[in-house]
Amino acid sequence: MQKKLINFLILQFIIILPKLSNSNNFNFDILGCFCEGGMIYGIVNNGEQVKINDLKIKLSSDNYFVYAFGRKHDEIIKIKIGEEEKIFKVKKKKYKIEKINNLPTRKVEPSQKDMKKILKESDELKKVKNLDINNKLFSDQFLIPVEGRVSGRFGSQRILNGKAKRPHYGLDIAAKKGTKIYAPTDGKIKKIFDNMFFTGNTVIIDHGLGLISIFAHLEKIFISENQLVSKGDLVGSVGMTGRATGPHLHWGIYLKNVPVDPETFIDLNVLE
Ligand SMILES: [Zn+2]
Image (cartoon, rainbow, N blue to C red):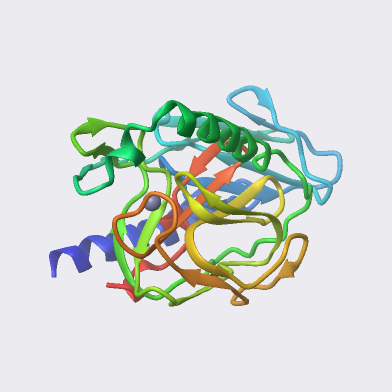
């Protein structure tokens, strides 16, 4: 019950905050979540300049600016659009410690040979985070890509087999092997990787403006590279390839190289 209430409050926060910032009266709409893990974006008039904390933001070809806060961020942010300047509060988030103990040793303490594969793959994953489609393809509300149970949240500190690892940059949704996975919003299939060391069978969807989704641990992949997908299109099925203790979808979102919390785009109440 309490969990439901908390989720309700989170949802309220996501929905209300952008409205609050609008009513603060910029002549512009800023959408998204002013929160750690969140992302904000908006469209401006031709030739209008946008500055965030005094730094000029590069606009997209369709005049969007976009900014992601990352896992940790200062409590305030200054946004200037044209001649208007406003200060916004950025909501802090508390992150949990997640312990996972039954992973194969090889996946937590990789051998030298495995390390070679890991480094090559992390290079490739870095590359897919580069800006490619410089216009907005995503919609304001995302779809939950798979029906299941939330088994891991964005930002939590991970302790795997007793070893402290980097934070978890994604949302884990546990579901039966073979459960269908759908595109959360429009995009283009940027890259497909088979059998990555950590992420297994992996799909990268480019949503434009430098925003990508990464789907990991898939069993099957039903789409191909460069294919355009619409919100709700079938992408693949849940598996446990790569480093996983059970079948689940790991859904990561990045704005260029800044990790974004998928929960800020969806209504989790549907799952719980
Ligand atoms: Zn995960």
